[in-house]
Image 1 (cartoon, protein in one colour):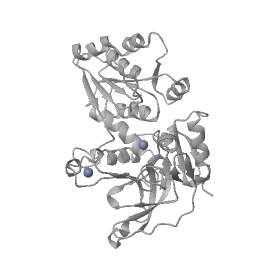
Image 2: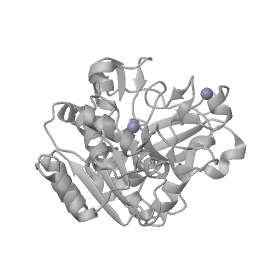
Image 3: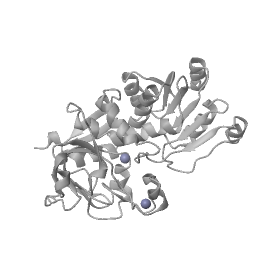
Length: 346
Ligand SMILES: [Zn+2]
Ligand SMILES: [Zn+2]
């Protein structure tokens, strides 16, 4: 599925790539539709055309360019989509998410909405050791790792209480990570009724931002909120985070802002009075130092500790992908996570 220009996203027949040197060819098994893919197709476009979209994907290694990599054939993996320049200061210190000149599988290079994808080298593969793990689930490793990064950067420790604003797939996964990291109370806040019911069905405590007394309700139940993850990128999310957070508490800014954020005067003052810690995050850590969060996500999935399967509400083949994009863009359906699953291709 290639983007040729804004709003021209088509299923094209192209030649199967042949890996050379360090390159690796994977048979794509599943690829998630990211929130960023929708504006990419209909409003923003990309820098390079035509390009196969899809950056949240998993696959099985089917061909290698280099004999040394032969043992990878048949292995299941999630794919790290950033292709860092490896030259800038960020890359030299292993902070690939901050690379000043990166390439990206699925926006600047061909990605996962395809039968096959050419990966620059084995460094991008995060192998699963569990033959049972579903490749559909492995396509959620990227957003699951962003959620993990938010919790890790919050420095959440055992016994702390956390509120996550926004109950989309990343918010729900952040709630699950918070439990794995030892939070004693986890609550979500959401405005959309369908998302509220979905998150409740996932077994989570969810509060409705439309309730006039939602802050009171949360404080009554939790007593204090040590950490807030702001996952909406909105003014109301930001102000709520400041109001909820305890003195010396931590707010992680995870949601991409959509328009100018307005923090009201009283809340601006509260940031100072409470000595709040505001922490911005961007993607996740892939280097071994300080910690390879991608490997940890796959390990937790392999062990069955991080569950994501129930978050996949929609699965389609390549043939039906454009239709699904249209429905999501037109807000005709409510999704948690929608993916392309190669098992549905005919
Ligand atoms: Zn994404
Ligand atoms: Zn770089």
